Length: 429
Image (cartoon, rainbow, N blue to C red; front, top):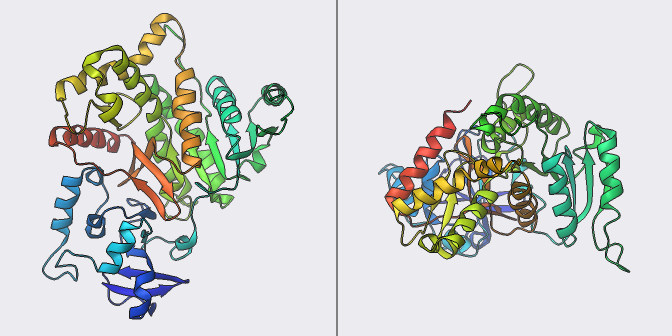
């Protein structure tokens, strides 16, 4: 590998002719960045290298979730002409990976090397400012969850809605929730206007054109909402671009995964409709829908002994919708049981509608408040991340060296289901 000194960082790369100062042999032990080159429309700008196989990838995809697929892809990416032909990283690079301090940075990104020393303000000791757009059924519950549970990591919560009465109500209500004699334990809630929406560390998008009423007969409510909600989120993604927003853009509205992609593309499109990569980087946008699907799977696992393994060995992948993938266990995967549990999980919202209520409370807390708090704290959680041009739900966390996604040794039957989900997400425009 070849080593460079860029903006105070020691970087490694397979490329030997980059226009940067060469690092000397002694400096190699301080390597903290791996430089790669891929289409910025289809690759994260920065991510954590948590396995050596990531150093050899030619494209980003769902294969990054499977250890077997990832290593096979690495083998394909190593050619006799490649400087990586031996397939073994330098000892200094391996040490950096094992220590969790090697971040990968896309040298082809339009904002390189600016993005090298940018990282989302997550997992740090300082408390964050959170702004929430739209305080309806879901938004008000997300707000309440963040307000009650976020005192350790949230300083203030700003709320914005098209109705001044709604924001006045919730500012009044939330700020009257307090522990006796410890009146500053919970974050302050205040009203924020549209012009200052992105003066924050974490922006939470819960705006929606509306949910079909109970009894409407519409089976896939999420995709029904996509057309209208994609226009709304595109508007705010462009505002984030113009505000030079550097925080986390949390997408909670349905359908979560396609709306993440819509936000990313809108933010990175210039006035002529061309993708320029000058807006939000892919990992700045995170989709919050998988948390409740994971919780619903756990609900059914507690009800039925056959699914009990999910509670300690299971995982969920994919979108917050029909293409969800639930695995009863990674080590002891049972395809039939997993598909049965998946069906129960996917249709849980319909059960609530049959009772006569809109299913928004569990999503607001499991996908929204709880998952966002875990994200802010830099802890593992379920949410949708950028993978090769789409957003897909996986277990992940943010670190100071980039976003980390879990890599699992999984059976091929399970991976093929994830691959099908990936294809379905690519088909949504």
